[in-house]
Length: 205
Image (cartoon, rainbow, N blue to C red):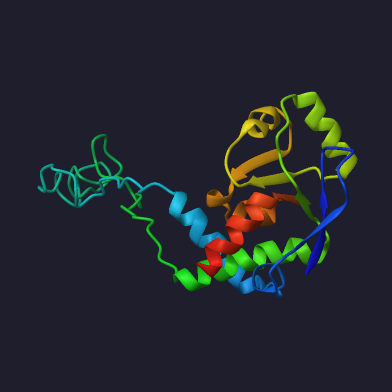
């Protein structure tokens, strides 16, 4: 698959880059993407703290008064949730969010996320991302016609990352941090040549 290479330099010659069909030419499957995104979001969750329920509270188990004839509501013991210091009713349980997902499925999901942008025409390849000024970078993005939410992936976190961090709706990642959730969330995906090379090497190596 051949894609035009854009440049921030107006004098640069027109060029094209050959994208691997094994990485950018797959047909996206919603079930695979859903599995990978769910796995990603669950991995981010911290372990939930459990609360002490009636069986966990250290209080007397002796029955409070008689069952009938006392003139007050009937109670069992002081551990009941109705009392101060009693156990929590239907409290949160300790949950460890540590899901597992096959490496092949994770790799396939990333390929499909990249392919979805290539097929939708929302993929832009840049020859480089070395821009010092935020205002200058904003003008370049307007010329390229990027969407409201743009993800830029470069080979490494360079000078351009500092220039773009104040632009609303622009997210930046080095190639090693490319992931399905951020890619499919973006309206426009911008890859540099270096990012393309690293992503293809990641799957071929």
